[in-house]
Each structure stands twice: as structure tokens, then as C-alpha cells.
Image (tube, rainbow, N blue to C red; front, side, top):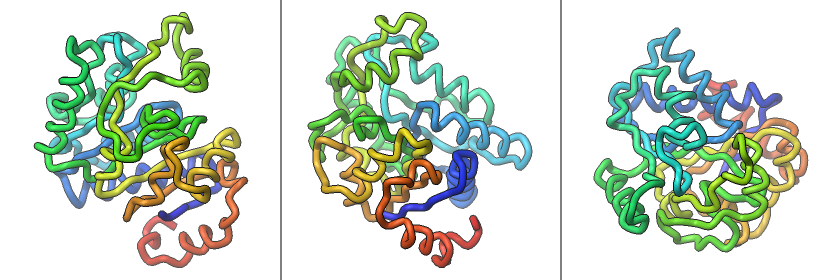
Length: 261
């Protein structure tokens, strides 16, 4: 795991967008694992701008989102399909037939989860998985006690997650209590993983995820086992980390990061 500290939330989002753009230019058929949430909005804004101004090409890319609420149709403004269309897909030249999210309205949810896993395998697996981190330390909707080898499945959302996300709904009580999510094991199979976290409210959980013990109570700690995981944080989110001097050294001295300094 590498930790890269940037000065501001904007700089952190810019770095992630540049990393995605680099991989997409090198590998036009890139299979992207995508995340939602407020932290990702500025990343998608930058990718859309790169498409407009630099002709960043999404035409051959395929995408798989981490999760979707159970019980919301794709047309619902609170669905993650709607979120992705609004923040990225409608602003780049991606083929919508190559953009995949779980179907939260499926009659057989277990079969939908199995089919989603099978489709990822058919596409060759995730090349680059983007992640945020929730207040409980969840990646995707892998709430506390999610098995570290778990696969795509339906999860009950924790009270903390419900409290965090329900204000985004016009009627908070209408927020779904369950979601389909990629499992921790599914996420760990991505060839590269990049987690983005910004803001002082994420400092405690980032420190636990990066430097704490691996535990199913905090699913993000499983990323410590990934062979190619990068965590990008701003100064506020890095405030509780113990190894900041070393993390700064990595970004300053490692040749991999030379184009991004």
C-alpha cells in the first residue's frame, strides 16, 4: 500500500483523474471499477473536462460500479445509475452498453449478484478500481463484519451509513436499507486499487484503514493485503496518520510519481 498526500481536496482529485486518464490512454479497453459519493464528483468533473479539452477517449472502456440500492429503479434520481449518468457517462463518449451496475430491482437478487460477478469475469476482471471510504470504514457497502473473502451480494446498511446518506434523499426515511455491493474479495481481485479520501471527517477512519490491524469490522483494512493499492488523501484526511514523513518521501522520490509531481 502506498499513501500519497496532496495539499488540498482539489489536488487529490486532480491526481486521481490524471492516473485514470493515463491508464485509459495506455489501455483503451480498460475495465474500470467506479465508485459514487461526493468525493468522486470532482474526479468525474475532471475526467469529463479531459474528454472535452484533451479528447480523452472512453469509447472502448468498460465500467462496473461497486454498488446499487435495492428497490430503486435506474431512473430514480437517487440511484447510482442516475448518479453515474449525471456525473460522468453523459459527459464522455463511453458506450452506455458497456457501463454496468447491479440491478437493484431484480426479482431474484441472489441471481443478479452471481450474474454481476460472472460478467466481470467475462470482461477479464477489473483493471483499475476506484474507491471512497465511508465513516464505518466500508468500501462499497461492505459494512462492519463483512467477510474479507466476500463476493457481490446484498448487504443491510448500518445505522451510521443510513444517517450519512439519508440527507441526500428528499425524504430521508425513504432511503433504502439494503444495497447490492461488490464483496471485499471481489474488490481485492482488481489489478490496481486507488482509494480517495478527503476532509478532516475522514482522518480517523483513514488512519485505522491504513495503519490499523486488518479486521472485518473495517473492510477498508483489507486493502493492506492488496499488492497494488494506492491511497490518495489531502492534508486534512492525513492528519491522524503516523507515517506521514515516509508517505511524503514516497511521492517525492519514487520514479513512478515523477510525472505527477
